[in-house]
Length: 272
Image 1 (cartoon, rainbow, N blue to C red):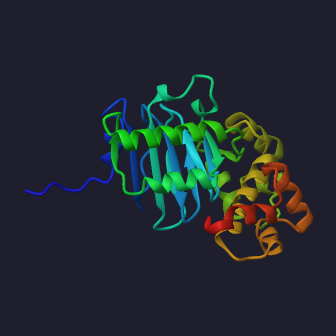
Image 2 (tube, rainbow, N blue to C red; image 1 turned 30 degrees about the vertical axis):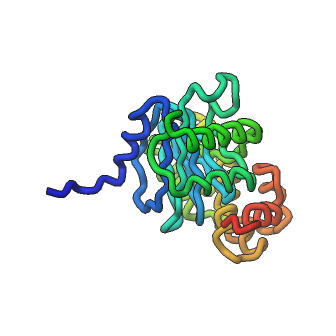
Image 3 (cartoon, one colour; image 1 turned 180 degrees about the vertical axis):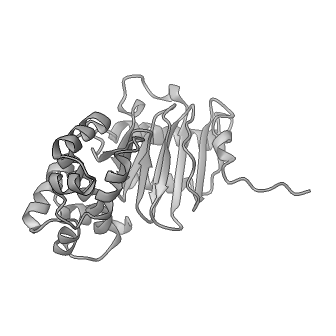
């Protein structure tokens, strides 16, 4: 009798051989449950927008960047576009020095060299140890390149919460970004004072209402910059800004790059 195909079996296979470097490339539509591994994970998403979710944060993943998840970190990747190719590589912990950046979570730019090396493994699947000399040596070389160039992760993290009072407020913000979402107006919408709403944000996600709103608007604009052909001004207005200048300044404050440069940088050389 034929066994049912389990698309999540690889989650168990990753840690099966401790010393192996495991590879899993897939076009996956299902959203994986929250999970963790005993190995470090690199994920490179081709063809759309994605988010890395942890129990406390949601990280936006622009095009031409990879996610680095350290061993033991609970996570899942949320895909916002259909039929995306997800390229996953899993490295044993002891391949990285304890004081290296890649012992902690980060989102880093994909250089042309890293991209070509990842694509070179396109037909590889499963775990590779020293017994598979050619593949293992190549993957160790990739490890060395990653360690050399992965220096400064991008700081695009949006706090999440399990608080039942705050969750609908955050949902309301996400669904009404084009509106003038001032603290007093949102507080009134939910029958509370501005002071109470401000306190809830600080207590449960350790960020101010205004900073959360800025981050959410910038992340939404990043999605639109990569996924639509809308002009910078159209995106600014759609994300709640009355002027391009104000939008560009907030965008730069959060991401350290201007919107027009972000779009050029992330869509160059077929990066989308």
